[in-house]
Length: 466
Image (cartoon, rainbow, N blue to C red; front, side):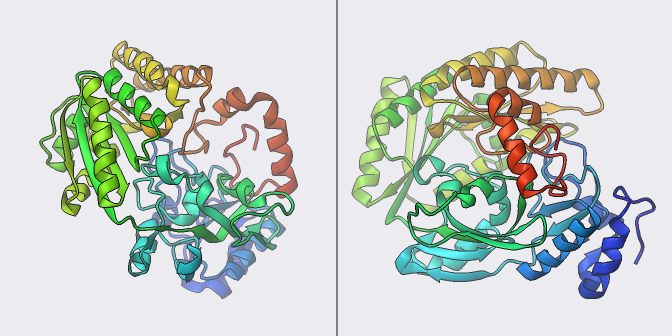
């Protein structure tokens, strides 16, 4: 087996030598495999680990982490590689632990509406397994991410307005800690007041506190009926006003997504659609046939009062699939507008009452630059994204995008929001974490030191000095 010409981590070769007898071909130092595991789908520069290991069990993950702890070698958990803030980049080298071969459904309890799965299973594979039970796992970040990766980044997505983020749907975890010990947190009870809530401390920790290997999840019943709708507006402000009134009216929409005209144009071209190239809301309603029609009509009335037009409603599965597939491909659609560039994605979330002001100011800010930056968002919970198209070889363009991003984050924080609604901190937002949480950051550092005193768990991520 070829070894890297030069190890980023000087003691990595000792771990590799110790692991090779047990893992055989499931340990790779091939350049192509290492490069694949050194970057995600973001614009951040990649950095390959010294080796990649493919465990089959929690005990094997423990073996890897124990050896890494012994030799002070970094550990980088890897799911599907779909993250957007450089979470899997091996900035200090080390061993990437690819969880893709730990993809079993361990248990499903339909009567309790829960299941336990291994971390490497993807959300689509889990829902395919669950289909005959009448249940589903609703958290849908768009990409076919692994459940472990979704837990690590505190993912949410299009269904969060009704079903919550992954955080609200995790009951318990099995985690390999930084010393190789195996810890089980939480349980299957729907509530507990026993001890510190380690489960939800680890959700969103981005691999900096431990490696998640198993997850116990809440499940939800597949709705009796599902309806989807689109509605166009002359302005983004009118669309956002409709969103705010829908949420304030207590209409239980399952999804409510906004695209500006540039994003609709991109989706038309990429997904071969013929949608009107105007600001548009995509909506979905879950419930009985009667309640779905009632919800749809109430939103149609609100949209009409705000200048909305061409309200199209359908309960046909093929129409819904085509619509939401286009929405999920929005990132790739935007990049296809200028294929020689990369997508620099933002991810702010603000209180819904401030959404209109923040989006309006952001759109004006974009128009003051030379950047192409389509807007899309899970606006039902105040979360929206710009996808800025940037040529990394042009420093002025990169600087302009970074400056626009910083102004957007400051605007969101001033509105009582956050720098990241769902993508996480990773490499890209560490400075913003300090700006957002200020006095709480030393407490976060203390937690990191307590869980990972040697600093081997996904170093360089989340905390500025980690």
